[in-house]
Image 1 (cartoon, one colour):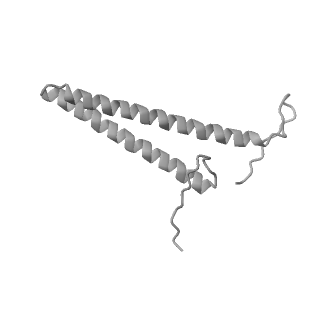
Image 2 (spheres, rainbow, N blue to C red; image 1 turned 30 degrees about the horizontal axis):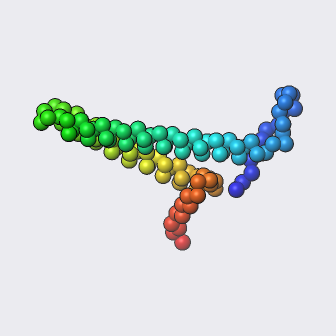
Image 3 (spheres, helix red, strand yellow; image 1 turned 180 degrees about the vertical axis):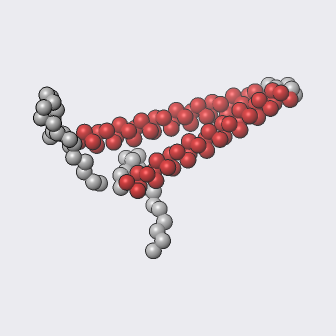
Length: 113
C-alpha cells in the first residue's frame, strides 16, 4: 500500500508531523462511514419493501392503493440495486487505487493478457 506523507507546517502549534498514521486513520474512518451508510440504506430499503408488501396486502382490492404499494415495492428494489451498484463502484475504486477496504473483501478483476 502506498504511503501518504502528511503536510507538516511548523507554524501551526500542536501539529504532530510524526504521525503518518493519521492518513491510515482517515482511511479506516472513511471505510467505516461508507459501510455504515450502506448498512443504513439497506435497512431502510428493507423497511420500505416490507411496508409496500403490507400496503399491498391491506389494500382491500382498491386499485389506487395497490398501485401505490406496487410503486413503493418497485422503488425499494431500485434502491437496493443502487446500493449494490454503489458498493461495487466503491470496491472497484479501492482496487484501482491500490487500497484495501479492510473488510476482508478480495476483488479479483479479470485481465486481458
